[in-house]
Structures are given as structure tokens and as C-alpha cells.
Image 1 (cartoon, rainbow, N blue to C red):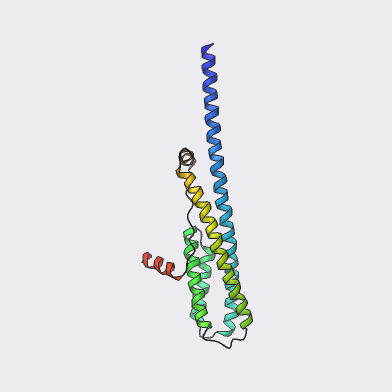
Image 2 (cartoon, rainbow, N blue to C red; image 1 turned 180 degrees about the horizontal axis):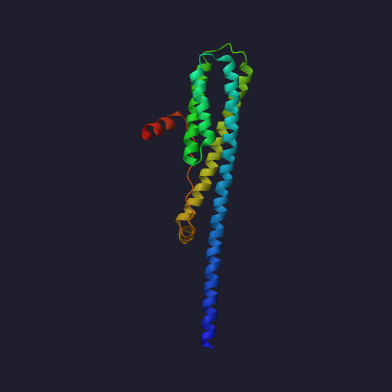
Length: 188
């Protein structure tokens, strides 16, 4: 009889332990999904940014003859962003695109009599709104990544995360020219 009671207690202990592990894994999976969902907002805005840059290049190409180098840099930065795969690559490509857009704006300032200033003005406004949304969604993503990463570091969920091989989420840090220059200098 005592063997049977001991067997039942072992089975119950294993079942309870299994339920706890499944609960922790489910919690971590939910947080991971939140991180991925918040990244999708950034991804959508980056896609929108790529399209807006294409429209900007087409519009500026008609008016700017001497800005070919700036347009080429802009198209190159746009393609880097389109093919970025990791959060770090995306952040760096987005920052490079921001620099290329700023360089084109400097050239456009030299052409006060553009044939399509209204269209350029609209595109510039849309790009500014897009940049603002990327920054806002970046904060949301970073907040979700912070919460998820904290869960991966705290006991006992860290044991479950290690067992299932869950990886930390990278942070997305939108930035301007200064951060791009700093990153390029550190890569050299």
C-alpha cells in the first residue's frame, strides 16, 4: 500500500512540475509573440519608408540633375534597408537611409525653382511622419523586448528559457546622423 501511495506522489509531483514548466513556457511564448508583434509595426513602417523613398527619388530625379550621387546613395541605402535581416542590420540600414535622405534634402535646397515642389513637400511630410512612427514603434518594441529579456533572466523562467533555447530580443534604437557616424567609425 505504501508503495502505491509513493507511486501516486511521484506521479503527482512530476505532473505538477510539468504543468509549472508548461506554464512558464507559455508565459515566455506570449511575451515573445508580443515582441514579434511590436516588430511587425516597425517592419510595416520601414516598408512604407522604402516606398516613399522610391517616390522621392522619382520626383527628385526629374528636377535635380547634379544630385545624381545623392540619388545613387539614397537608392543604395534604400536597398540595404530592404534586404536587412536582423534588428541590428535594420537599425543601421535605417540610420544610413536617414543620412542619405538628409543629404538629398541639402541638395534640394539648392534648387528653389523645382518643377514639382508640392509633390516634394508632400513626400517630405510623409517621410517625417514615417520617421516619427518608426521612432514611436521602436520605443514600443524596445519596451516589449525589455520585458521579454527580463523574463529570460529571472528565476525560474530562465531555466525554462535555457532548456527550450529561447534567445534574447535585440533592441531597436532609431537614431540620426550622429549614431550612424559613430557606428561607421567603430566598424572601421
